[in-house]
Image 1 (cartoon, rainbow, N blue to C red):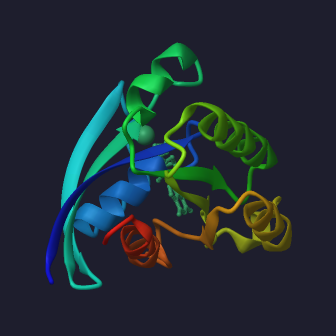
Image 2: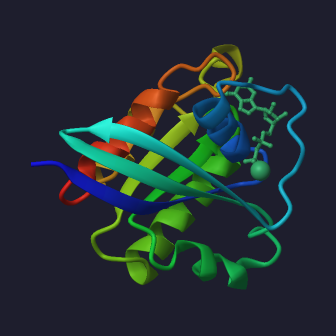
Length: 170
Ligand code: GDP
Ligand code: MG
């Protein structure tokens, strides 16, 4: 049988972690060294074929939640999936990612597919968060984990496909 599925996906994480860059890489195959800051939220859609299903991802790239945290639930409400992004060269961004995970566990859709993305994995010489630590955290919290690079494209498509595959009935 063939299913068509629409799924809302939200990206959350510290400013500068690379949320917009991951989306730009995935949707347009591009990378900008000086990605403009997102204002509010940006919306993209991308259709994938997985497991005999067509999944249309409705992607919400958020910004400003650092300052206007109360807006965040508006973005993750009704989301089937979330990518929580941190920057492997920035330990504070990993701490912040864990806070997002806690918030989604408490307030989000209980069946939400959650992925943890350790972005900027091209910056190995500046690494401040070990992959082992992040993987252990992800396993404890039943998140899907990948290190990604929006710059080199490593694991970017793979991450979005893996999320699409894990959606209920995809
Ligand atoms: P956002 O605030 O989370 O949306 O982050 P942006 O996508 O705006 O990225 C912040 C900065 O990090 C920009 O200068 C990007 O070019 C840079 N950046 C994003 N992803 C990567 C990556 O994978 N590797 C490297 N080296 N830089 C990245
Ligand atoms: Mg952004």
